[in-house]
Each structure stands twice: as structure tokens, then as C-alpha cells.
Figure 1 (cartoon, helix red, strand yellow):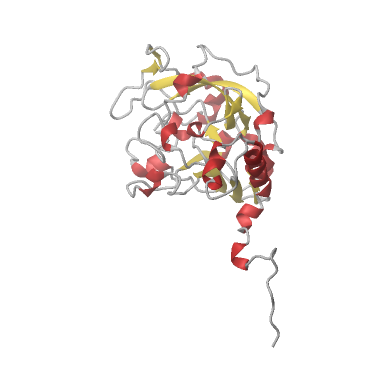
Figure 2 (cartoon, one colour):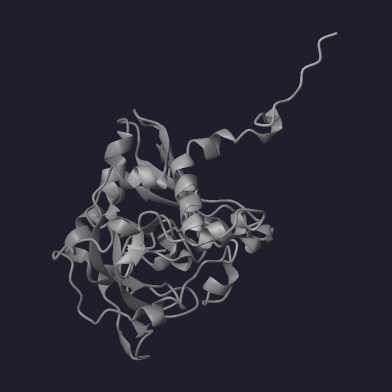
Length: 322
């Protein structure tokens, strides 16, 4: 009878690294190296500490600012904007960061699928090697009638669309956030249709203003801003700018967005800022600056009409605002 002795270096098949993590091995290696550099001993606590580690893309920041996008107001200080965020996956309040203790930015896989010639999946750091980061100063307008001005770092969404090479049948981009109730406690709330879903027409997605964000204030973005990948569409109300994106699906059907499904009578697909169209429960004619508390008149398309008004010509009679 042949007896096989297990060598000390051999592992059972049950210990093999899952495929998804294997393909993000560079992110994991970077996290491990940072732990060692910090003098942290590997063990059960390591997995909980990864989210606190320095971002492996930190060397890409600060990126050069694009002077084409200017503000009519001062940039909101980070200590103000960092505590006024809607991120219902973690908290129903505005100060989200204290509820994000288990959130990890690495490993992070991004999937492109649907009506495309180049379906693919890659880690966030591999994606960053395919694009050129830049900083843009954008106004941000929430449907709740507050506003701020933020120095986002990222890349034009049209660059990701080019990577996907959508077919002629593709008319929309459907975006989906991560789904992990162990990390995001409110994803256990059955009243909401998790994961968060948003969508744009292909024309909107390739408009020069549509921006995929990875950083803020000259550094990798903290979790409450939507790290490691979020959308910013400054001519739309903030709920359109989905956070924590893991999937881009190109489709010929208009996606049903998260808030549209939750409360379609108040929140629709378009979310274009228009001071003349009130929310069913409050006016949109003015907005409150979160820094000063002062109110100012709301601008059509949040002041970005020169860039986006042509997208909606001939559709003025349609319900394209909410």
C-alpha cells in the first residue's frame, strides 16, 4: 500500500485563491507590502485592515488640472464636503465615513459587458493604466437643494466607452454598484432594490462632461466620495452620480435606475437640473451652499448648458427632468 506523505509546503485545494482574487493579485500584493512596511503582522486582522492602507494608486496624484472647467464660486473645503454625502448603502445620514469601517477599496474588479465588441474585466489599478487622469473643478447640485464645488480627479467616461467598443445596437450604459451586505450594512434593508443602478444614454456617456472619478482634493478619494470608482455628471442632480461602480453594461433598453424603481413619481431616469421644475415636495428654484449656508438661484443644467443643452433639443415637452 502506497502511503503519500504531505510535504510541509503543500496546501489542500480548498485553500486555493479564488479566481477573482487571483486576477487582482497585484492589488493584494500591494496591500501586503504596505502592511509589512507599516510593521503590521499578518494574521486574521489583516483582511479588516486592507481598507485602511494607503491607496496603491497614490503616486498618480495630484493630476494636472484641466483649465476648461471653471467655477463661479470657491471650492468647498474638504472638511465640509466629506461629511455631506448621500451613500445609503452605509448610512441614511450625511456623515457616512463612520459607517464604512469594513469597506475595502482593493481588490476591486470592474466588468464591461453587454452590446460591446470588447467585453472585459480588470482590476481598478489596471484600468488606471489605460487612461489619463486629470483634475476638474465641478459644481455639484443635490436634488435635496444643497450644493458644493469639488475638485474631482478622474478621466472622461468616453475613454471607458472607447475601451468597450459598443456595437451600433447599444443606446444606453447601465451602471451597477457593488453588492456586499457584510461590508455595506444597509444593503440588508429589503425596502431597497440593491445593488444601486444608474444609467445614461450613450450620447450622455460620451459627452465631455461625464467623468469617472477616482480621486478628490488631489488624492485618491476616501470611501464616502464613492471610491474607488464613481460617476460625476455635473449637469444632473447628484443621485445620478453612482458610487462604487463595479459594472458597465451596454444595452439597447433604457435602464431602470435605483431611485426610479424606489419612487418613480419623484425620481426618474434623466435627473437634469432645472430650477423651473419643482420636485413634487419642494422647490428647486434655489440651493443652499453647504459651506456658507447662503442660498443662490439654481442654474439650468446646473450652469452647464453650453456643454449639454444640445443633447435634449426637441425634447423640451418631455418629462426629462425627473
